[in-house]
Image 1 (cartoon, rainbow, N blue to C red):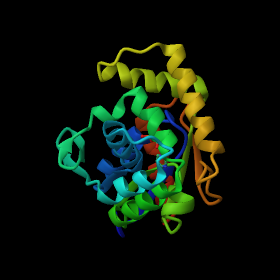
Image 2: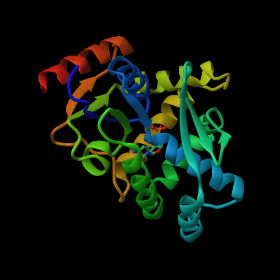
Image 3: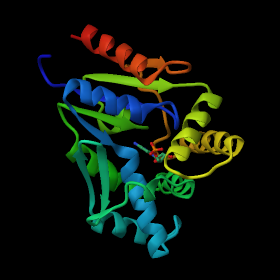
Amino acid sequence: MGKRLLIVIDGPAGAGKSTAARLLAKQLGYRYLDTGATYRVVALSAKQRGITPEMTEKLGRLCAELGIGFEDNEEGQRVYMDGKDVTEAIRTPEISMLASRISQEKVVRDALVDLQRRLGGPGVVAEGRDMGLVVFPEAAVKFYLDAKPEDRGTRRYKELLDRGITADLSRVIEDTDRRDKEDRNREVAPLQTAPDAITIDSTGLTPEEVVERMLAEIKKSG
Ligand code: DC
């Protein structure tokens, strides 16, 4: 494939963004940027330091000081917090809710959007909620990946089981839906579809089928 592009994928929790973004990046030989992980690392660190979402000044300072890093290896991507591997620790239901909550704070968004822009660029597949509208409006191809609520909750549930975390399916569906509503209705950078985004409904599709559609769209875009 010719020129390296910046590709973004937005959409609600459990639509299959991470799997699709990872697969797509692999097929194109691009780097995968998981922006949700940056919010999760801040949430984990805040929790460990006893910083609540209301302590905005402390949260701002934490974002400025915290070292967030990614490392790719054969098995996937590892996430680091001040040099410590937190790949699994940031995926618990508690950190999911806290990440959603702190991502509503402007100090956090400003700091992390800055960091994400430094990590993004041509040859990157960036995945998140505000990629196409806020972080990378210049992206060459923008996708909005959606799926029915039951599908999204079930996907999250399976992810938790795979990680050895026991959960209740109906509770996970409920949590996923609640987190989405919060992500959509917040005042700061609500989850919104970029007008130039290509929407793909992943309901009933395998990750490979989703990526196939994405590759076809990328090809079309020139
Ligand atoms: O994609 P994820 O589930 O790992 O994201 C965790 C939380 O972070 C999610 O509830 C909303 C927030 N988030 C965000 O506000 N903006 C992004 N670009 C990515 C994630």
